[in-house]
Every structure is written in structure tokens, then in C-alpha cells.
Length: 147
Image 1 (spheres, rainbow, N blue to C red):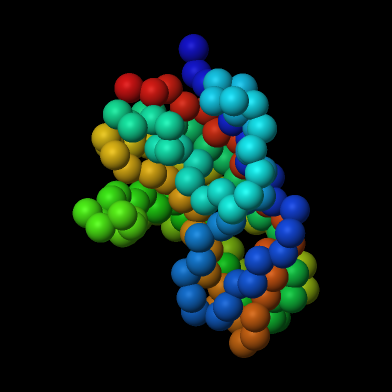
Image 2: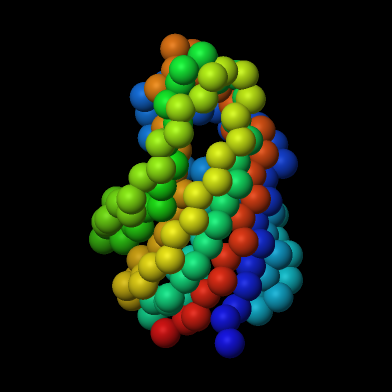
């Protein structure tokens, strides 16, 4: 039986042109690991699943202030420890890259994967507009099976 957690974002986050940005969530509901938590949350899977996990997630993101014709790219990225207390890129998953006519955009992405021991999964975005845009909200449902 899979476990479930739900992430939400309720404060804006700047999305600069041509710069990959990790999606920051502000709350998570996870009955298996203590209920609800708030703060700066980036990893969907891997924080508590030290031995790895199978996972299936979907995410919906709203972005305001996009330039006309701006391409938005969204993807899952796996990170691993850098040996010095930080995290480094380990593997990118396939990207989705819709083009938007301008203003507010609503984007979705989903991915299933097999997370290796010690890794974490984040959602990253980039936009190719002329000015900064703002991620105004996001939600993600994650189903996972710890190893």
C-alpha cells in the first residue's frame, strides 16, 4: 500500500528568466511522518526515505507575470549528498516545456521514478521570458513506497 503526502505553496517565489529554480513549498501534510509541517520545503521524496523509494507525483503550478510567448520548463530533479553537508544535482528527469501567451500560466507535471538510496527529488522550473515572473501557488500529491 502506498503512502501519501500533499505539499502546498501559499507565498510567492520569484522565477527569474533563464535560471533553473527549485520549487519551494510552504506546508506538507504527511500522516506517516508526524502530520503537518510548515517552512521552506523542497524535497518531495527522500527526506525520510533514506533507503530510497518508488514514487509517483503530480504537481500543479500557477505563475504570474509571464512575458508573451515565454516558454516555461518544469521537471523533476534528483539530488544526492555532496559529502560536505550540502546537495548536488544527480539526475534530471524529462522536461515538459509549454509556451504561454502571457500573464498568468497554469502548468502541471507528473513523474514516476525509482529513487536511489540517499537521494531526494525536487521540482525545478525555468522560464524564458524577458522579465521576472512569480510562482504564486503550487500543490503536489505524492504517493511513495519506501524501500
